[in-house]
Length: 328
Length: 257
Image (cartoon, rainbow over all chains, first blue to last red; front, side, top):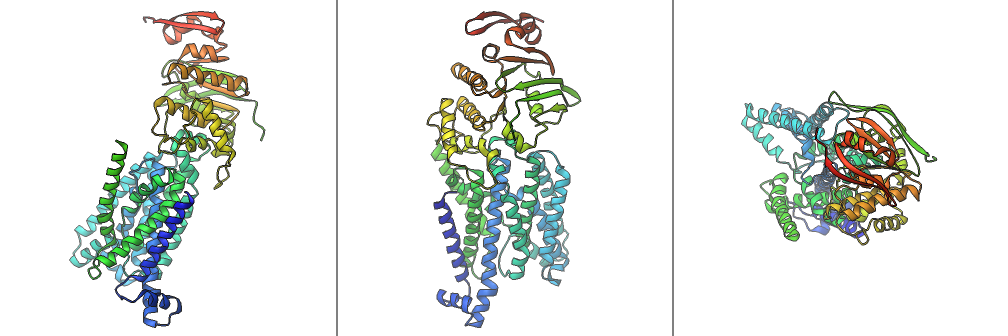
C-alpha cells in the first residue's frame, strides 16, 4: 500500500471515529462531549460517552476492519472478486446459535448468552468445515463445504423462526439478524476483540502466500508456499473474525465483498497490499454506516445491515458500471 | 546450503484413477545441460515433471521432492503449463514474485530486484512492459511474462512445462535458445517439455521420450530421434538430416495404424 493511501485511509478512519463519538441522540455540542469523555466533569455525559458511544465506535471500527480484511483474504485465496467471508457458512452458523438463544429465552436470562452461543455456532461450523474438507484438498473443496454448512445453518435459522410459538421472540430474532451496533457495551468489546484481533493477526501472516497465489496454486506451491497450512489459517482466522463479529453485531454483509473491490485499483491489485487497505476501508465503511443509521432515522432504530446493503449496493453497481465504461 | 550439482528421479510411479499414469521413470539432470522431455499428448510429461518436483504424491524417490518446500524453491523453479494471472497487477510485480523464496517474512523486496526484473524482461523481448497490467497481455506475452517470473527466481535448475506453446515461431525459437543458453552459458540445469520436435532436436542436449507413462528412450537427439522411434511413439513419418544448424527434422505425414 502506498504511503499516501495509508495516510488517507487512517485519516478517514480517525475522522469517522471522532464523528461517531460526537453524534448521538443526546445532542450535546462536540466540545462538551469530548470534555466529558476525557475529564468526566459532567457525570451523565461522561456515562454516555464512556459507556455507550466509545464501545459502540470501537466495535464498529473493529468489526469493519475484521470484515474488510476477511473479504480481502477470501478474494485473494479464491482468486475471485465475488468471494466474501460469508461463503464459509461461519456467519450463518453464528446466527443460528444466536437465534436459538433468543427463541429459548436464554438471551434475556443472561446477558452474554447470545454472543457466546453465536461463537459456539461459529466453532461448530469450523469443525464441520475441517471435517468435510479434510486435511488435503484444494480451495474448491473448502468452498463447497462452506456452501453446505451455510445452507444447513440457514435452514436451521428458518426452522427456528418457522416453529416459533412466540411471535415476539421470532420478531426479535428477525431484527437481530439484520445486524446492529445499538446499545453494545464494553462486555461486547471484551468478548469480540480477542477473537477479531487474534483472527486478523493470523490472517495477515498469509500475505505473501496470497501474493503468490496470483500465479495459481501450482506455481505458488513451487515458490515454497504451503497450501495446506494456508487453507487451515484462512479457515481458522476467518471463522474467528466473522464468528465474533456476527456474535456481537448480527450479520453485517457487504463490507467484505465491497471494500476490497473499492480499494483493489488503489493498491494495484496486489493481494498482500490489499489486506491492510481493506481493514482500514472496512473500519471506515462500518463507522460511516453506523453514523448514518443514527442520523437518518434516529428514533426508528434503522438496522446497520439494512442500511449497508441499501447504500452499498447502488454504489457497487455504479462502480461496476464505471469499470465497464473504462474498459470499452 | 550449497546448491546441488544434479537432481535425480528414481523409479517414479504415479497412479491416477487406478491407472498408472507414470511407470517407474528415472532420470538425472545435471547443471549445464538442457534436457527436452517429449512424447505425445497424455504420455505423462506433466505428470513426470510434477512428480519429480514434488507437487504430486508418487512412489519412488526424487531429490527435489525430498527437500522442504522453501528450500526447493531456491534450488529449482517450476513453470506450470496452465498460465494463471489472477489479478491485474503490474507486470513488474508479477515477475518479482519469483523472489518470494528469498524474502524474509514481512520484508520488502530489495532494490536490486527491480534491476533484475528489468534485465529478465529485456532478455525475453518484454522491454517496457514493467508497468503494464499483467492480465491485459496477449497469449504469447503472458507466456513470456510467466517465464520471466521463473527466471527471476535464479535457481540452478528449471523445470518448464511447455514454455513455448502458443508462441509465434520467432519467439518459440528465442525461448528455446534462451533455455539452451541458460544451460550452456550460465550452467543451469533445464528440463523442458516441448511438442515441437524440430526445436527440441535443435536446442536440447539430451532428450527423454515418454510413451503411455513409460520412459522409452533417452539420449542425444541424433540417437533418440530415429525414424523407428518417431513412427512408434508419435505415429509420424519424418525426414531426418544432420545439418550445420543441428539436427533437421521435417515431419511429413502421420502413419496409418
